[in-house]
Image 1: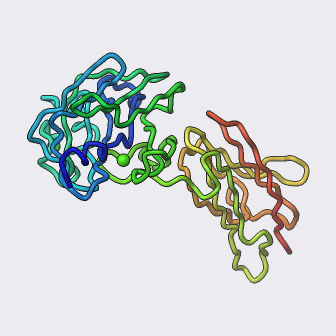
Image 2 (image 1 turned 60 degrees about the horizontal axis):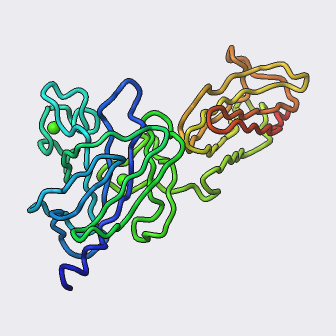
Image 3 (image 1 turned 90 degrees about the vertical axis):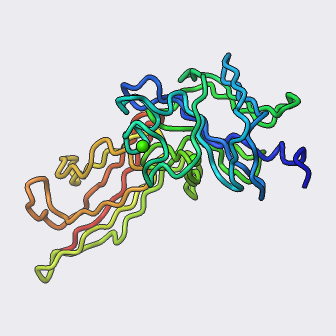
Length: 276
Ligand SMILES: [Ca+2]
Ligand SMILES: [Ca+2]
């Protein structure tokens, strides 16, 4: 394959524009080499809002590999830098097993609320572009859904860490990007025979939302708080049929409420039964 045929094989795969809380220099852009060949990044141009960066020649990105272009890769005291936050904070990139991918410094400032990033090839042809018009949560990146398909869309990162620099992007849950799913199994349990089975509860919530789960009796009295403001996208919980004081509840029907806050404010209520 001619070198020129490789030009279109570098795509944008992830953007972190809204840094983790309290940080100011931690923006980065992840690129991906779709091809089956090493590609020299020399000649590629990254444009982030008004900042233009000519990537340095002689740096090779391996096939099907990611590289991070960071606003501040390293810093002397290790703190406010990509290496300090996503690496081992030694002050040097590449000296730790968590730092096993290519990362470079670029000059850029990405706005949280709206912006765009473009990658061009040597002759100035736009290879890929991403535009955003709303802020993601603090520390949550935007990821391309499928790095093998340049036409695929983008979504907020579903990984509990909030981003996936240098590695595969997170997967959209089966229910879709706005998935809010609750599965409870079983829905009837019994106090009989001393032993008490628990309700097993799995919840999928959209990115940038927080989940609170509470349990009420039939009269609307709250008997138990299971979790508050959890940001985990796929969460497994269990309820042992006891109240907040650890006391087994009387047989009857109970209502488990699932409330989202943040970007979406949906709710669900699911009835379960404690049998005699
Ligand atoms: Ca390091
Ligand atoms: Ca990634």
